[in-house]
Image (cartoon, rainbow, N blue to C red; front, side, top):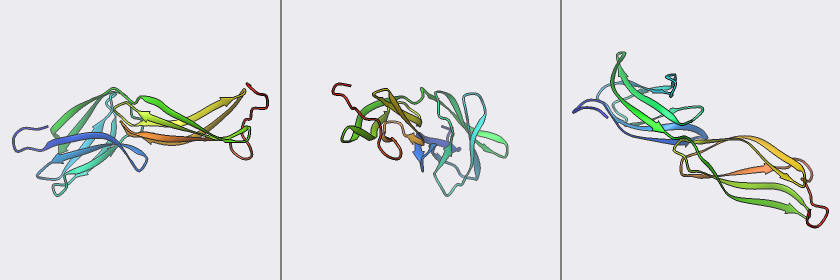
Length: 168
C-alpha cells in the first residue's frame, strides 16, 4: 500500500505454484523495482525484479509458518513502499481416509487433508498403523490455504498389513 501516485502493493495471497509455496503479489509501479519478502526473523526469503509492464509476480518461500512477514518494494536501494503481513500458519484437518483393501490386506490408504490455515501446508511424512504394523511414506507436497489435497500412503511392494483374525 502506498501514497498517491507512488508504487503500491495492491493484493497478496499465500498460495502454491508448481508444488512450491509462494506469495502471489499484485502491484502497481511506474519504473523497475525489486520486491523483497522477509521472514518473521528478518531473513530475506525471496527477491524478484518487478517490471512496470507487469502487475503481478510470485515470491517463493520454503517453510511457511505463522508470524509477521515484511514485503518491501525497493528502487535504487531505497524502500519505496512496504507491507506487513501477519499469518497464523498452516492448519491440517483430516477430512477423509479411504483404505484400498485387497482381501484382508491394505494396499494403500488415501487421506484427504484440508489446510484451514492461512499459509501453505507442507506434508512430508505420512503413516498408518493396522494390527500393530506401521506403514509410512515420505513425500513432498504443499496444500494451499483453503484447499484439500490427497495423500497416498502405499504399503510398497507386495501386500500391506492384513487382518487375519475377526475383530483384530
